[in-house]
Image 1 (tube, helix red, strand yellow):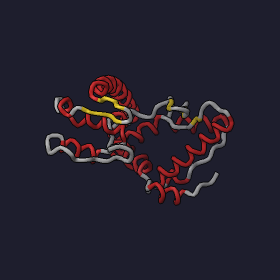
Image 2 (tube, one colour; image 1 turned 90 degrees about the horizontal axis):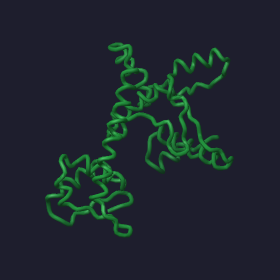
Image 3 (cartoon, rainbow, N blue to C red; image 1 turned 90 degrees about the vertical axis):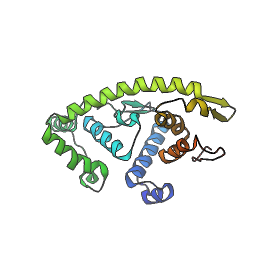
Image 4 (tube, rainbow, N blue to C red; image 1 turned 120 degrees about the vertical axis):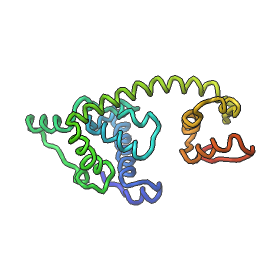
Length: 219
């Protein structure tokens, strides 16, 4: 299947990597739905988990972005997260399995490849067991995020009041939270607000009323 990736980039103002991912997943979902399949299986492995941690870290993320790649999200299943690239390639060679290498994986113009080829090898020089330790860290963060998420959901159930298609938030109750920013981030990011707008909302809470802040879908 071929796509007009450049057109998608221009229309949606996204990077080459994001555009390619969106296009292929959309097409895979069309195939899955048309054929009546249950899942789309993709080949992410342990090394991808570590790389994704650093990608999210450099872009800026909440704690959820530091908890690794999930084995099942909607109809996407990742059955190879138990192993790494080296083991997969060894198995393929031993079993006589042919596979295709994506030439773009060798080009350091992409963030993931820079992290894979330049940054992680430097950490591995410091600690040869770096990937193993990172996976342990990510697993621990996933547990922390689960506890954090339970608390955040409890606070949101108190703060957010639904009124038809409108949600109301008590400013006085917000101002009792300390630190305020993570709570505000978790509440407003659900409504497509990004970090700069959320920071502006936080600054305005003790100021003059009547200011408006916009996300693509909410005010």
